[in-house]
Image (cartoon, rainbow, N blue to C red; front, side, top):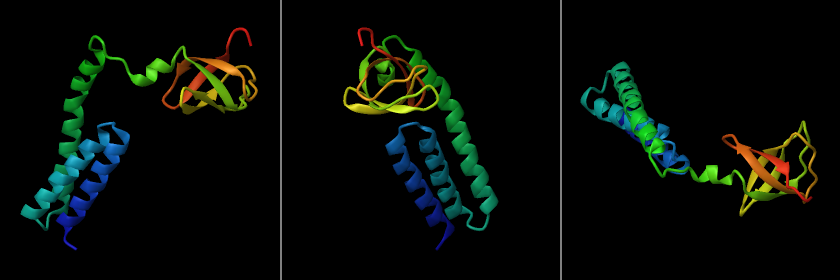
Length: 143
């Protein structure tokens, strides 16, 4: 199999993975692999050149898109949907201990959660903060 085909397959896999994650990082790697495929068509025997050009394109697109995404996220009215979880109530699905994470259901979604206090399954909680995939919860007042 020719090298440009392999670059094209890598680009396709990265672009499909980007559609599943929506982070823009895999998008730029996919575009870099696509550019490397084009370089492989032009200069088939220069693998190092293909890698360098593909990496340079991916890095350049990443660096150029950072200010744009930062400006978009900082714009008036932008609110990440995940940030809306803070302040919402949920129910503990799997018990949470001070040294052990559990699972809570907030709306129709389940999340890993931690709490400084032990919470039994079925307890009503309120989300006080979130990291990338873990919510910090406390027991709701009146429980």
